[in-house]
Amino acid sequence: DCGHCHYMPDFQDIKTRADQQWQDLIAGPRPWIRVGTAMCGHAVGAPDVLNALNRFLSERNVEAHIDEVGCLGLCYAEPLVDILKPGEPRILFGNVSPKDIPALVDEYLLANKTPVGKAIAHFGESKIEGIPKYDDLPNLALERRIALRNAGHIAPSSILQYIANDGYAALNKAISEMNPSDVIKEMTDSGLRGRGGAGFPTGVKWSFMVQSPGPLKYILCNCEEGDPGAYNDKGILESDPHKLLEGMILAGYATNASNGIVFIRHGHNGPIDRIKHAIEQAYEIGLLGKNILDSTFSYDIEISLTGESYVAGEETALMDSIEGKRAMPRFKPPFPASFGVWGKPSTVNNVKSISYAPEIILNGSNSFKDVGTEKCTGTIIICLSGDIKYPGMYEVPMGTRLGEIVEQVGGGIPSGKKFKMLQLGGPLGHILNSDCLDLACDFDVMR
Image (cartoon, rainbow, N blue to C red; front, top):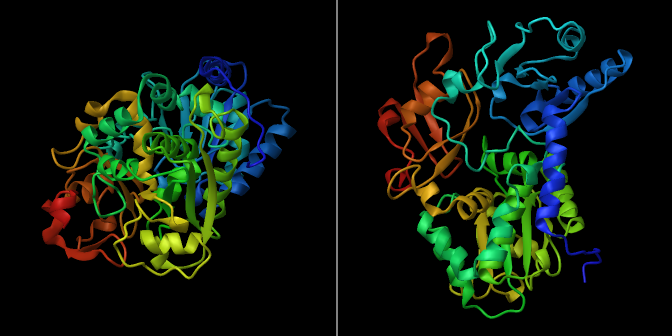
């Protein structure tokens, strides 16, 4: 027994409470201020901005609800401060420093002056002179968010904000309306291929473990992510950790697994702290532990940390690391589905692969297949860095050309310079020259 207290909630009761809280945020009497404190925000001073905001609001006796949120993907514009005033459009301010806070409070919150200057976009259908709509930003024209749908919009520390935005609805649907085999069929029919790099069909991978004997079986989530410039797995953990947890619980339900382990590199404290807190909340509300949602299904999740070992990202080396051994790849066979961590059947998935599951189960496989290409369905999350106008984390349909990513999403090369090369992926990727720009982001093309 893990020692957690459990009670059997009715999901609709939880959803009602979550919706009420969400309405209080978006239509209540107080401003709702969101500050981006993901790794990209931290790197350029978001904690100082947050401290200055709290201090100045207190000095001015302004009541506001403040949330730390994850990454909207606009890493080039961090630190981001997002303000929703009662009865006004939600406005996004970019590259905010502590010295900008007095003007934001005095001129916008108190004096109702039209905020141009630091304002980079607004949400909603209304028009604001000098401030473009968020959806009209040219570098977002190709975006189609599925795994990152909530990132930067909800507080990762709030399970109720996640539930108010259809969170855990897929889990409730699976447990109340679907058999485990139905979940695997939906995942297989979606065409989702593992986003860890190999591109193996996720639903098929889950099916391998169904026939493995219990009672102990493991879903292992690989968030080692050691490639330089790669931060989308950790971006999900620190922006929308419950999306990952819900996907892991769905994987456990589909494969009749008993336990889940999130495997992440030691020292990345933002993602680690947020996934730890999310796990605690899921236990408290009865979405992890014994008899989830008053069913016969029980499931536990814990975290395992690794040191600075790039090879630990290989799925069998990952299992050795979890067991406290040196991270070294094992010979195969036996394969993890029959003999995995501690000799028990195990399925290893990347963070992104698991995070698509709630959207696929909730909305159906066809909704996922309608995005991307015939053989590579869905989206791909791009970490775009280097000498480019709009570095950031973007989610675009599979099949998007590299040239579109460089020119449209990334805004091209600054100062009118010529594109020379890009590195695709980490050490195991390739360095490509300008001839690559017509290539599609597609597993088979890249292979």
